[in-house]
Amino acid sequence: MGVVYCNYNSSEICTGILHIGVGNFHRAHQQFYTHMLLNDKDQQTWGICGVCLLPSDENVFNSLREQNLKYSLTVCGRSGVNEVYRIDSLRELIWAGDNPGAIVKKIADADIRIITLTITEGGYNLDKETGEFILDNENIQHDLDNPASPSTVFGFIAEGLRQRKKQNGGPITILSCDNLLQNGNMAKKAFTSFIQAQDKELAEWIMKNVAFPNSMVDRITPTTMYADVERLNRLNGTNDKVPVYCEDFAQWVIEDCFIAGRPAWERVGVEFTNDVTSFENMKLSLLNASHTLLSYPAFLMGYRKVDLAMEDADLVQFIRDFMDIDITPFVPAPENTDLEKYKQTLIERFANHSVSDQVSRLCSDGVSKFPVYIIPNLDKMIKGAKDLTRPAFLIASYRHYLKYKTDSHGSTFEVTEPWLTISDELLIGSENPLDFLELSAFKGIYLKTSEQFVELYIRFVQNIKDSGISSVLKSIIKY
Image (tube, rainbow, N blue to C red; front, side):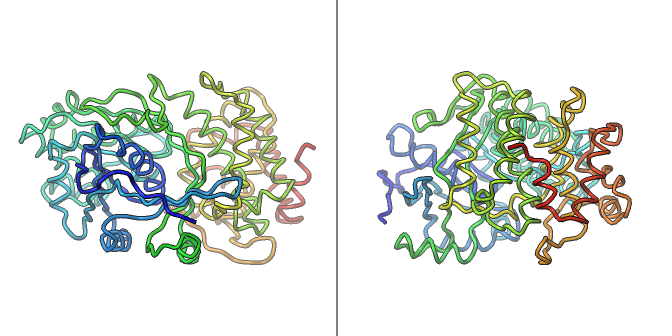
């Protein structure tokens, strides 16, 4: 299989975007769109400067530097035909562990007109119950007291903007590319709260000089395991230490309110709109919620790859019932969107053997995912007196997954839940299933007040323990 190289001279590309969080999704999504756009001569001031903040970023930082910041992206077709791109839009890369001062200097640089972010759901440091920024965090307190030596994303951006203000670097847009409802509003809340607590004069400057558009992002991008590196290099004839692979579907919808100019991403398929709400509601309520719905039952059944789980007719029907019966009534389709076609495409995307996403990735960080993907529509279902069978089964499955850490084949596993609190751990350990409904993942909705939900949930908890996950699943699907 041949590799598609860029049609531009990368040495002539200037950086106009600084991106924080150079993970796989960013390299399969924003970098891909930007790479395609840089073929246009009038867009070649929009190269990307990547920023890595975490100690765990050292490997990707070193590997990309060794490869002159180039990497391969394999786009896996549902038909089995793949396309391989040599991505060259990443023009600079800075790691906080190597040169933190360079990050501040780059943010202050007038040539940088957009800061983009993929810092994950939990990275915005907002309380899940109140939505307020959490100030009493050790790292946050350090950055508030030591603005010249930041350690968090908030500290770095605050110091960079402070220097930008001093140098008359001009206004700038902060664009969240994280998978969150109203991600721009969340970014604005987080950064302005931090800066207001640190520097009120800078906070006033930000109100007039920084824009925070909302955006909706979509592209399934699995974690690249060691075996994937070998497989992709063998398949593509490459020698890439940090290759990325993703599905052939991609979507990016952005509110068009940039304060200092923007790339013409619409030329390569990005959609600009005045309000992203209907797009993100459709995506988070159908794709992300269905991923969460699938994850825990499938993992407990012994499936470790999403495409293999989608060969199970019961799981497929379970997802279809959830999308058609539970979610569709609450999801108005955006203009020019065929909702039935969108749902069918989701089923095909999940079943894409070329992507073969990890079920464990979908299971990880449920505490951050439930409040965004599941709880908003579950609240509507409870208030509308809808059938709560599938969400009750999901939450019973989540409890079993967290509490017993053993699948139906007797295989044990570790869970990845970085935001569990001590209180959460006690609730998971309790032998009273009702205590689990107080988990921080479900803040904002008091599940115990719904008699229907409690009755279904208690029954599913016991049945999963007594009869196994597969048997309970078969009892609730609607063929």
